[in-house]
Image (cartoon, rainbow, N blue to C red; front, side, top):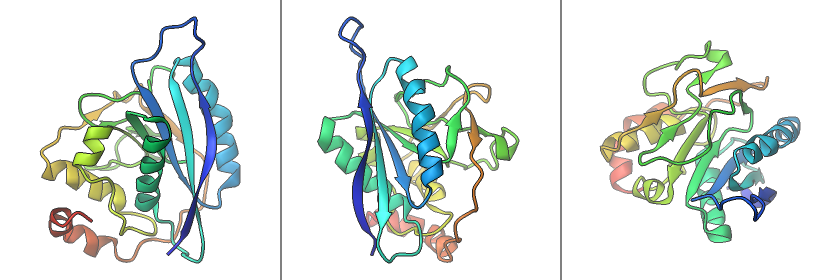
Length: 215
């Protein structure tokens, strides 16, 4: 199993002369061996979030150890627990490190239902690659995330954890909000895709049983 540690990505609050935002936002970024992406992400995202006047913290959750596969769902769950305990955040943005928002109209906040922000990514010709796609950038409140029992910890390697989360929404009959395509536009930084998760199809086929047993 991978060893994990929290890496501070930075925090910011609006000056006292401005109204206090209604929510505290945590940006959770799972990370492994993509230093150039992380540097560019932080360089762009801090000004982007500050232009929105958010009270926010960026939490970079880095994977260490002998596990060769990237365990994104597990990292998300650890990041959520750390951020909630650290600052009492009530809005959580689960964010791939290689995605950069293109529009300031894309406000990083939570809604009454889970919200998919990255609906139009350049490598997919700014359209959803398939109907159940829930990858990239997603926003959950505390109650939404805990009702869904977070992401599955079992998906290590590329693919599956986002589709599994979509199925969890379906199981709980929870609606999903998607941004308009002209707002939820993102650029993906070039990278070599990680090794695929060979177990992803079998895990997805057994999703209902796993969801009932909370893993």
